[in-house]
Image 1: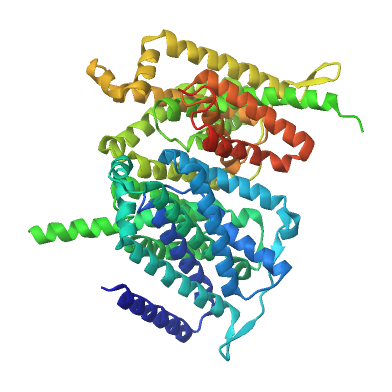
Image 2: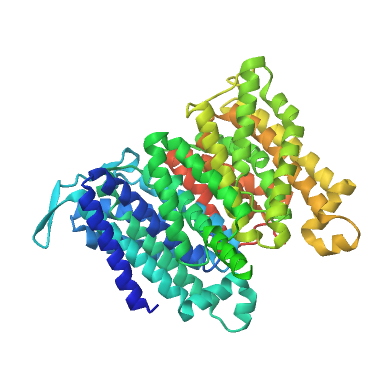
Length: 318
Length: 291
């Protein structure tokens, strides 16, 4: 499928989803759906670096929080519409991704993973000590009840839902485009054998920097509307380990090889968690993620997508 | 205003004591990551597990936490050997340990933390022992026993480990496996078995470190996260796989954190470890005593 046709299909699916949600008429659906969409963006962004290049990022929460706190900063300094904030959050998180990649990507993969953990704590400490954005006390971002979009009055939650929906479509389309481009093949050579790729003349460092920048920027964009969604933000919620774990677990469970994996993983795991959060407890829903992650990396190294592919191959043979 | 020399000296001494404790926390990772090339980011979770075991036994039976740590050594050794076996069967054998192995340990870290939260809640837990509280004083220098005991015992532990690694047959085999696994296999030694023993020892140190941790500070399940950065910072700073390097790295970090906490406030202290780690990775990735 051509990318342009794919984009149209994806937009159509997204529009259908929104219309369906409107017909359902439940505010809660938008509230829970927003979280799942946010995880689609995070998981897809993580997969661009983790799945395509093979570099594990444990600091997803840091990039997410950078986006969120960019919004908090502008909310206090000079209020801007959220779409602009999303771009700004993406820009700043992208720059941080580039900087971190530049510091650590010349090293082995494991060092990069540890450095991302380190980055998360350094940034969290900075935010905790930065009084202007609330410090450890947190900050409020009161959202209006409704907003006019192109002359139509929308409840604010639905507005945020649409923005996240567009972001999710954007992230998936970008991931799919990368996968099928020269860039994607370059990423795959890095994942499979970086030394050999380097020897063949693949500019590995430059490719890795592109990957960290895109991945970081998308995570920052996912975080930018977060303060308005949650209305009260504090460092330990924005930097929560849940974001880091989920953005690793979702692609791993779905399958890291292609854009479908993170999408499937995020929808599945995100929905399970939203259900578990309401029916059981929020601690248990994190336990589910942890157990599923360990289970899948051991039993099904290629995730659900890999399982389905194996099953189809076996069926074709018989 | 005079420069507070006494304060500085006290901060440095507290840093050295803290560094001694960090040695115990890091030595396990030093073995696993430095020698076996297993990026066990779940190590702090095992340490917290050790803390909680020390807490339970201390509260129920009134045993000394350090003694509990020593009694738990065989249990943690077996646990470590079992984890390694799973890791080997699932990842290392197929040569795809990098990405999935990391995710595996991350998952273990997460399961342990959430599991402890579900069982014990997020309250801070602490232990009772005679040496928690009193302080040894030389004129203006304070040496709290709460820090002194773990520091001295950690140093004893690392000396014993260093002797084990350089004097015994198994110890030398562990060093050999860190240098060249293939050559070891050619000598008719089984690298998997050697690594299993080494990883068992690595996790066993977490039992002791956990006991020290709960002596030094009250513990709740997510405390472990702060230690991920510290242990890897120390490991990388000192040079991978070098136990003397671990001691130097731990002392440096302890002093840096203690001075930061004294002069700028404790909320900045976590950034020191990670800042140091990022700088080391950027400018001298092989560490101070690295090969």
